[in-house]
Length: 63
Image 1 (cartoon, one colour):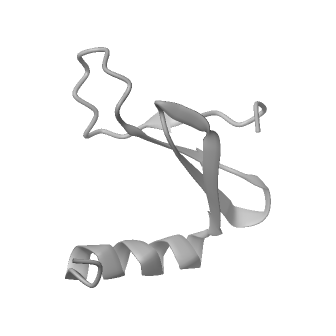
Image 2: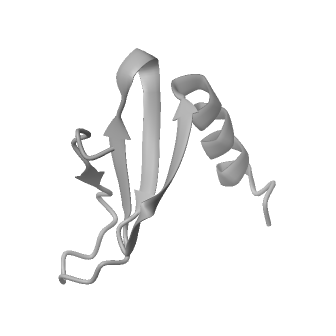
């Protein structure tokens, strides 16, 4: 996945700490997510799947 261009979350505190979410657009509409302090673990989803996950998170489904 080194060919991906990773973008840090706008919620990153900017203080140089590695704790933030990074996103990268992949081929065929995929979206990749990783935590910057563990870049080897990557979650990959299509845009619709990611949108559904974020909707459920925002609604409080996951606690």
